[in-house]
Image (cartoon, rainbow, N blue to C red; front, top):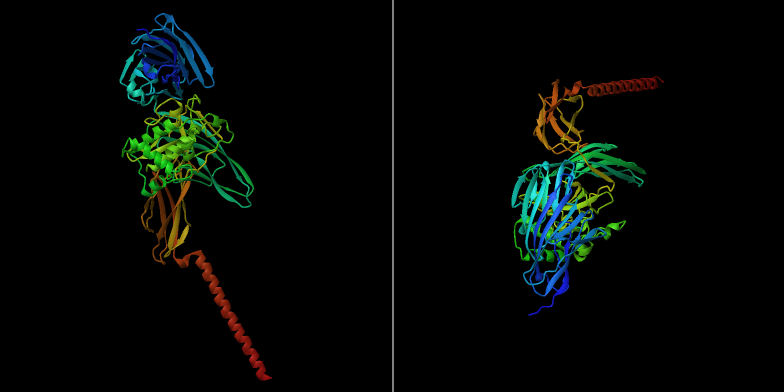
Length: 627
């Protein structure tokens, strides 16, 4: 039997330079007419460049077709030293860079026809998109392979220098780990890489320095009080604010945990606030115990809002379709199903980044226009769907370090700003995820493991629109370590002398002059003779850097005729301050003496005036009688 052998080309689409995502272009044959096996090695060197070696076996499952060439489209501009070879020697390789991608075309030296015949060849190239040094840490990210292509097997080996140290986190867990000479080896298989890419971190902590400018204007006819948003401490980051100029009136914490620096602006004022500081990011949460959310807060964080239209019928219908084939009551599993839907449904639009005034679309518009999404839409759609499912969710806005913005884009503003969501799990606490970067990086897992690149500058939970952050943000990697430290300044505000027998109200002012937040602690007030009305130990809420709070205490004095001295002592976090006060009977106080003297003078004057008037009237009456 003779078969007509048609020459076709197989085109394999790789969304990231190493993702090996296969998409067979159906010229005449179908995808099922060929199968592939891969043995892939990623060899990371000490400078971060990676040699990728793909040993590929292409098997013909039909006698009707043979393959003449093989193409890959690489979502990378840093590809170099590209080569390919088979049993007959070097193969012709052509590369074509077009915009953000590079296409590699390999021509086979011989065409192997016939069912069951196999084509063996090796592709090699280098790239700097897979490993990057971040301060004192290293991060390796490899994308997943698609499940839709006809891949019989896929085995991957990642090797990194021993000098990187032991990995502090790795996802998914490798099939095997070993060491030979100066290299660490990790192996993975197809079943792992169909679900997610590989993400490995070497290092626990990352440091950044930041400077932020905030323009404040008051064009009204009246003075106003306004605020700016400072980077907050979270479960994953510590903030050290070294300078705020000019100094704020106070710094407070809102319901989302944002730090708000308050200013009084006279009418017609234009002010520029300069904030500088450092951030310490953690790959794992600082505290093991998870904070709980009250019932009232749960209601707020699952509420429908502008851009997060969780009560919209389209959102609810979409949520039902997501859960229809995957019923679960587990919060993390629900969140991951929503996350995967957002990642697989929306498409990042680089065209929108060219708009001078990029507009936020919101969840519903993103759902109806899936090809026009940037990080705001990925975030808004995830939050809306999560809230519709009863999962508290909110938005983080801030800086995200990206060595290649083609793969990990930033789209909030001109200074590398980014948006990503987080959800609340009763068992895990707040969990950050980034559906945008998983979508654009070809499947790097940003759900099960996060990174040390995301610095939160504000949190939106109570409101989908506020607080806003400045678009004038400068962030750089830092090698200077710091330990979060507060510095409390205590003062007791009360008169030097008080009246005995009357209630007394005193104020204790606590000012945090240090660069870092003061965590909640106890404050104790002590006296020797005065009686404290109520508890003498109270809980002092957290005070951010440059913030202050004032506590009021009611004291009771003894009887009115006693006179004595007492000492008021305040103890906070091992710091002690004291103030002596004089307790005097009411009648011994200078004020009372002045009042008493005035009253006496008035009485004497009144008595004298009355006598004088009486004497004058008596003389006048006597004169009339004589006449």
